[in-house]
Length: 346
Image (cartoon, rainbow, N blue to C red; front, side, top):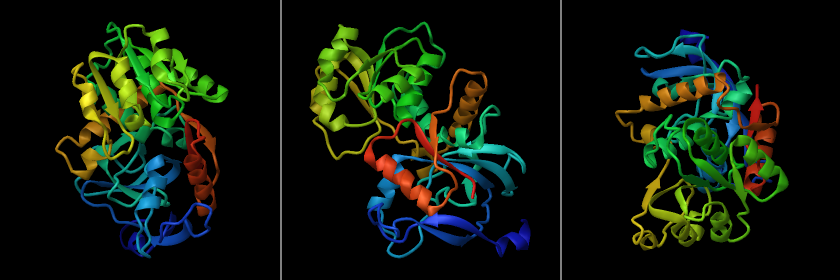
């Protein structure tokens, strides 16, 4: 599919026209769309597998396209089939994985264009579905740990304690794995069900505490002097007072969840630093260092192929179509997902 042939071709995709409850058959629909043309820095990728994240249903619920077709999806793995004229990092035939950009069409289509600077080479030891589970959460975890909290990659001599909430979720599981593989931190993770506790431990959590019970007393049993860092994936606004209690003086808190405001003054007495992490910031604002995400994903792939990290894919729902994506959204909206839900092929 090159040149004029590609310009006239269409492809299967999944989209939505109106924000609707996920049990409505029109909340996600199968459509045919034109195959996109890659821009100067873009790759045209034949998508082989995708993963679903909370951002998918949050955008579907809050961003009504007003009848226009909008394609969701911010995790994919596939093969490069064409490149833009200024592409330098990849060539046709390369297998890649990436999360994409929030202000461009999503990955739930047979072909997808993405800036090469936010794309990594797919881990050779993983299937497309296993690889598709990793990009968004790996970038979030890496940036949160090593850029926002300022931890040093490979500094295994550094001791301390990291608390990560929802440790059996997609991001929490990658935070735990990276902390275990690349730092000397003791990882405490929150989980409540037997199956989430088991998964969190498999991902690298040393101590598990129940997020349905008050956290400070539980954490104090493991870290009597407090924790050095907290990676908040959910409930940061509700738990800020508890975080201020548990963190040591000069500790750090990074949050990725959505809320309007918090009583930030609770952190002042201990000089605790607060950080936001959004892995879409680089692509959204076209920052000069966008290529950093390419390097991070290549490093993730290397760590996977070396056996230091593993995929967080736990459930593949089959073909990439509207019915299966509605089921994926339903699972994530229920809050019961463990690891990552994927879909494979068209």
